[in-house]
Image (cartoon, rainbow, N blue to C red; front, top):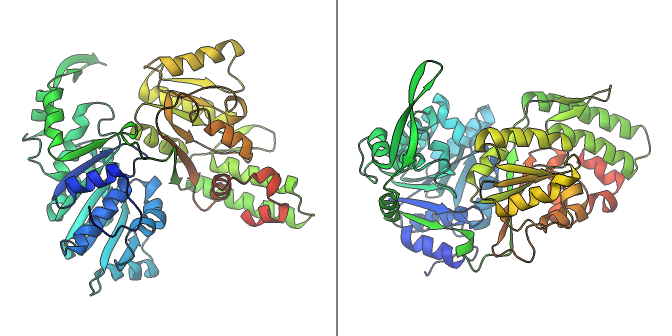
Length: 476
């Protein structure tokens, strides 16, 4: 394919573009880490260069809208394409209104609006997206389209209504079927209600699922008993989608790094700001050493993870978004995954949530409180038992000497400061026996010390020994 790409595409990305670039509707069913975001940006650039579109609406989960805006678009959108790019903010101040209004000024630039999918549940978000699409010949892309798998959800209904005023439509996800094939219906309805050739969700369900009646608290409800005709469904999908797994991509780098951002809850932000002021007051009142700066940093870091140590030494939980983001990442993950957490306190919360969603036996642990006589059994279950999809542990305990090559996705729920522990924990999956590229996902809280920690570790800086006290103070 002859095109002036800003960043060189891999072979599977070229294939995706060749199959899709001028199609009005298309689905990129590409596993996390295979670069579907770049494919979408290149697709939009091609359509713009051909005069087909002058607008691009990107709808993505909260955890990745910042990445789209700050990293993916600046990295991959070709330099010759003049653009006006705006990140949606629900709180529309006078300044924000001026920024939003720039999307409608006369000009030939490509106008790009990045919105979080949750905004489409609101009247304000829906109305603005409709106004944007009505004013432009636009491509609408739903990133991680499993977020619209629920046909009865308000955001799903709103997004499907928006599809009527979009010229081109794309859905993107690494895991199109998170629980069952019925999740596909709404995603495909957004593209075109006739693609699956069913007049309703219930007609679709009757074709591909057998139902049974169960009785719960005196009520009779219909649930899926088993699926049927899945070969037929797979053949139908092939007409308008491209499926690729990391194992199919021979030219991918050995390690792929992804960030997922979260925002602090109101309670977290209030406590974080209070603790930050106290930390600065403490450090300003004494000579700043690396040790006392790290102590203050740790207190702030704990808050970003959803807990803090009270004056009496007890651990207090704070409402936070981190566990929800972890579950979103797991939903998008094919196969098995390793979850690393810096604090033992978080392990129990992670296990509880994973069991609730994925069922008993879906996760094992390997950390300080895991009994010695269970540790090797847990590794064997993870490596060999298909039902066990996840292992959670701390890099301090599980980051050394064990082999976890059954996974090619590694998620850092939170990070510590020790570079050696980070590198060692990365290598539990990336070692002899691993036949696929490994994707590393860092969950971090935006505008906090969390971002500094992840950035330094990725640059292979050992925070505990290489960053001086005064520099750590500036992080706070």
